[in-house]
Image (cartoon, rainbow, N blue to C red; front, side):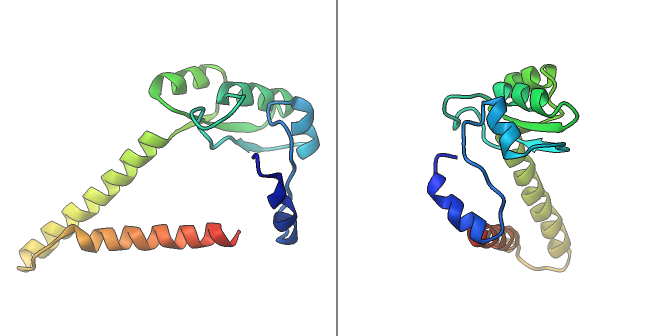
Length: 145
C-alpha cells in the first residue's frame, strides 16, 4: 500500500502490518518471518504500480515455498499464465462479477416462478434489496477495520 500513514491506526486496532516494497523478498521476510500457509495478492495488475502478480507469485513462492498463493488476473490469458507459473488459485474480478450476477438473476428467476404461481407481481427490487443489504454490511465491516 502507498498509505504508510494509516499504519498507526491499524496498530491501534490490533492489526499487524508492515510497510515496504512488496516485490522485495527481504521486505516479505521481514513483514512475516517464519512459516506462512497462505498468501493472497488481491489487487489486479491494472491497479498495481511497479510490480505484477506474476512477480508477487514468484517472490511469495521463493520466500514461503510451502505456502498456497492466490493471485489476481485481469483476463483469462493472464490467469492461465499465472497457473502455469505455480499459482494455487487465480482470482478474476470479471469472473467473480459474472458469478455474482448469475446468483442475482437465479434468485430473481426463482422468486419470479414462486410468486407467479401465487399471483403476485415480481420485480428485481426484492432481490436487489437482499444483495444491497449484504453489500452494505460488508462495507460497514470494512470501514470499521
